[in-house]
Length: 255
Ligand code: 13P
Image (cartoon, helix red, strand yellow):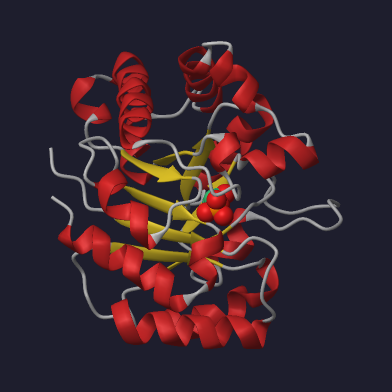
């Protein structure tokens, strides 16, 4: 099963609208026309409207970093899937470890968001990953399996083409410590096995699983060459057009 690479930039809480325009203009100029690798940028909410107008004429896709599960209502400070769709957002990062750690999100609360996202035809990029303590205790696969099973509980098989997973070992995020190629491959293969148990082999083989955690141009080729690594979710290195586009180019030439 051939899966097209997806390279996604998670800009986190960085860049004003003006700064976002500069960055997306540079990205568009280098990788905005090609269609070999899917490219997606996820700016903060305040930059989504301007970035949306900028990617309209390019192949670059637009994502958000979070959403609320209800379509509207008295939820001060929140943004719904419908609001994002109205700005031509196609993807939404859900369950990022920073949201689990600082904002109390759990597999169950993320599950509600994932189901609402697909109801609005928004593609969830569902983030999972173990902490250092969990890895050292030998419970990585147990944690990942619970995150997949609980986060995707009730997920309809018919919507699997909308789903993207991102394996982001918490200890590798923003630390400069990357999972080795083998560690990433083992985790991705294990995640795909859980998907196969839930949805069947053939469906599982079509779901893209991205790697995230200190991915940079110099380690991207090795990670992206692993058979079950289908792209990257890039934090720090996505804030520089050069390093982000170099990662996209690494994906273009990866096997
Ligand atoms: P870094 O690339 O900065 O480690 O961040 C990864 C990440 O959290 C992407 O969602």
